[in-house]
Length: 425
Image (cartoon, rainbow, N blue to C red; front, side):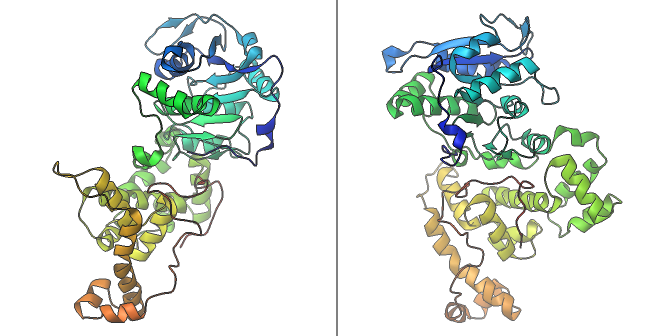
């Protein structure tokens, strides 16, 4: 999860005298999902001082005129209106009813005013769309439910959307991914305000892990179909469906443009306007995610996985896999299997760096074989392992320019494809 950004000047904004951080306003709208709405009410609205959890004061505010109806037809009556936000040092928007609708202007004005006066603004799940509509996410990193992340990136291009994070803390503006990730962010707020002991005590009362990460959850596996809902009614939907069904074949963006009966330039423009992502980067991401699935569910070698995912060589797979997931394919598989023992028998944990060392001879044979027209297996079969060792490269051209990190998460702040282009090999 992203930590507080020291580079954001707004994070140092002084809190107005009448606002206090322990006063938490939760902004509810009609049509909001009941689960997301209940998370901040439970975390900040129940007195658990007997368990060592400092008390917050909760203000439940209606973001629009009553009645407020939640999913399932339940009707809520909020005790406060938008005027109560003026006293809160923390304002939480737990969810927004529809990503296709604009939030009420009065609620957006109240959020802007609270932020200008130093309040901490929090958006859970689709609540990020409300924060973005208020302009509070401009130029900032943020996250939301993986299914809606491309839509958020497309609609608000100045927001640096990262759907791989459970939550993003950018100082005075915080956002979380879908549903249960809202609990993670609320626990993080308690940890920030009162320390790890208080957050751990609250986690015990809620019977949830005190601190999760995206790699713990396997969050990456949910991103493979992360396209805007609007694509279903677009002619490009058929081309996208074909691409997902034929990832095992070697084809490029020109092939997709031809299937859409468009020039490459037109196809790029249409695809980007629809998804917020460049088609080449989207295609590479789908191939990497397919490789991730095969590494988790099959015994194919890395070379075989590369071929079954449409990569032209294992070297290409390793480079793109490392860039997106922060580890080599072999290291990822080893760590995944260590976390999930098969056949009920525990397996010894294999650290990613050890798996990385175990994979190097195979990578080096592949590199040597590519230069001489041999495959890695052919080199081993012809007794040329010693030659591969002698020709060992001094550095891995696909190694990241940063320290190795935990599996499933790259170092630094990841960038959603389409936000900032970078060369792909």
